[in-house]
Length: 302
Image 1 (tube, rainbow, N blue to C red):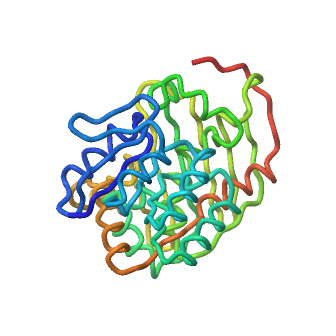
Image 2: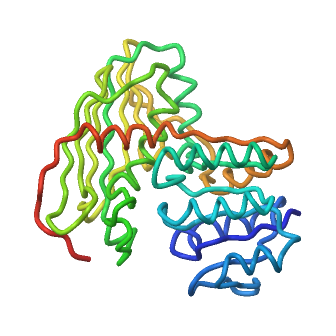
């Protein structure tokens, strides 16, 4: 088993990364780094540099930090000869992700920009079904409650936090994976709370009849749905890609193991001396922020 260090012990690390690592035959959670969070029975550090110096036996770092500080940690890890796995979105800017890719290549280490929703059980069969179809349109409906999923996490509304595009990038990672045709943004409306720096909702329109509706204010049942229309029928992905329906018929897609699949893939990359860097979802976020019309809405408070 390969020792790995998990950096940033917050909600996503506790809910997803720790169980995925613990259930893997490839990995041993050998250390954590966090200002406050720890994992029972695992050596913990509060200083990343100290961990790098003290645990030279750990060759792989998984970064679960918010996007803005992530670059500095990744750059230090790569400079120290460590392989790096990045939570989504992989960085605060496109340029810094490319810089990390260049660093990793020069250092001969693996860099993996993870997109966990692409590992949802319905995504691969949806992609396979669409491969030879003529797409006539698609719609993303991605609405959830920020207070439920990011309780009190002010960074999501700070510059670089991406606002509703933090969860919205999950949808974008799926649509860029399954469509057999390229798309680019035509227009966008972005709803910014009067007291925040990032949008809480957005409506996007792409080429090829693709549209998206993103909102972080939905309470009650959460909506993580994508519909794709083709000349040969319609496809629907629900529950964040876990449930696949084709022409009204539920398609069996297997077990739900998004994060375990990410760690399986990271193990493959390290063993093969390879990297996987994909910023396609981030490109659409950046396009929305540059092309979008800004609309000011009511202030938001947690």
